[in-house]
Image 1 (cartoon, rainbow, N blue to C red):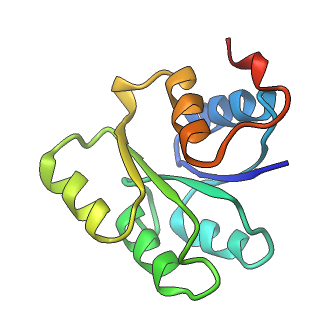
Image 2 (cartoon, one colour):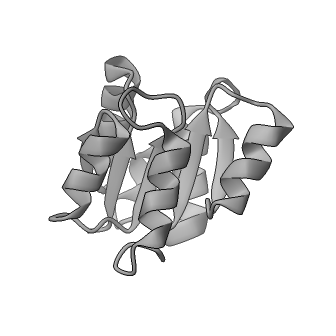
Image 3 (cartoon, rainbow, N blue to C red):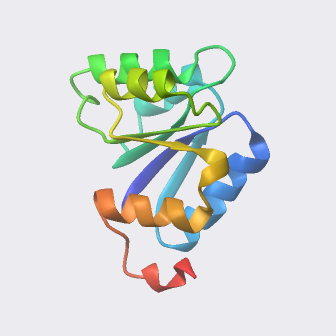
Length: 130
């Protein structure tokens, strides 16, 4: 079972991601800020990280930089998810090592599942994406 770390401070959205991704067959852990995400990575190595940008304690850009600087974690694909749609934010995220960037308001949960599928593949019960 592929593992995903969802780093999102909005508890409603974090729960929606967890429910949807679990339903299609992923093991999902949630972190609510960058500090918690790095702590979780010490004992949980995900196949992909979904990372919000605007968060308390440590934002997504700082968290992304820390993850990519770590030899153990640097190759984990990271999707930056934000309501910040400015070109500069997208460029900064990609320069720091994000694999993808999406604006939350432009994506449905099914779109997210398709994006993850294109990056790491879905699990056997992927038929539940509808």
